[in-house]
Image (cartoon, rainbow, N blue to C red; front, top):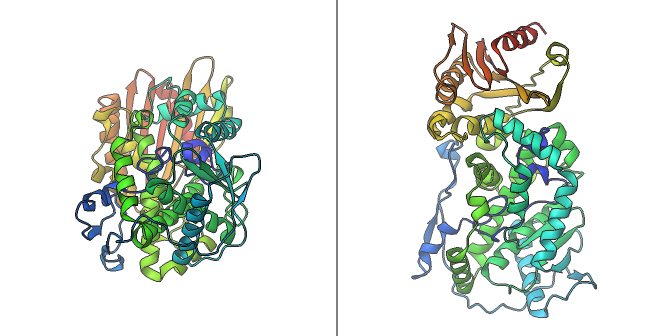
Length: 497
């Protein structure tokens, strides 16, 4: 996992701003690009409908008075004919690729013009359009992805995620990602090449037009705020701080998701709506649907909670408040989940000492980083074992008081043993106690009845070793190791640092 490889989203960050658009909209390779269930009910009668954001729990705690009122939108009465395009950024095409037809290029030009008008950001240059077959785009994405992600790294990810209780031991992560990337892909904006990759041969109907609006929003973000250098959104920076990386992506995707809904509200046609409904009715995504529960939730995090975060900022100061967030980016998933805590609530830095000297030979560190409030919630609520999953409200309450954490994982190749340490600072003693109680319930369901219960610590013996959670003031320490003796050695080392 190595910090940035907590999710497929983070792994791909250095390659391009992700909207691989598995299924174009609906459920994408990395998330929902358009909440289709918000609009299908109005297809028949062209009646206005309240725009209600449907997001997975835990719901962000947003003061009611700060929320915008539900948006009403009318289904456009325009025909599916495209009006004369407004002059805007010229399409510069790769001569080695098949040309985009003039009719489609005109629609793209017009969508770009409409997005510019809605987002009130000025383009800084041309965006190249590359027309690729679906196979060519898939090959490009897979090549870039697997240059940065090896089978060895995938194995380490599986070890770490299994220790956290999120994956089955031995889960073939590399094969899973290969299969996931083989599902339908519609397009992407590649910010390293400043290029819009468009899939040819499938027309340019409602789903493609909506996706293009989303992707062009990314192009405007890049031209105005410089995704790689201005936002420091790179593979290297994500290796150092995956929490910040997840928060920045939520800002990027939340912004683009809000924009595409604005575009749909103002510029889509009746035919767009019909196309989208027809597409959604026929779409299947067996690989995504079969993904572990926590991965499915994690894939959509930047779209659902990112949009909620952006909507909150918009309610306070319109698009300029969102622009300001690019100048002072969010730094944690806590800030995304609780927009009212942005930007003042900064994570506390936790340091876990090097445990190599006490572990001895054969052990190597395979992962270290910050888990964050979002993954703390996923551990409690979206684990591998259904019986160990806490109800969403309970897991949300238990993770809500997160103030900062650090974790480290060691692996012994010869024995197959794992050591995991996660130390979390909470906002209050009460918050620490709430997590302590929730983790006790979760781990008892996962490992069986506790074998050691004391005032400030509780332990579980199980076939894979020994697990202990202890609490001291506002800090909890979770240790998983081959036996209770090693757990106590690790705990004393951490407390004595």
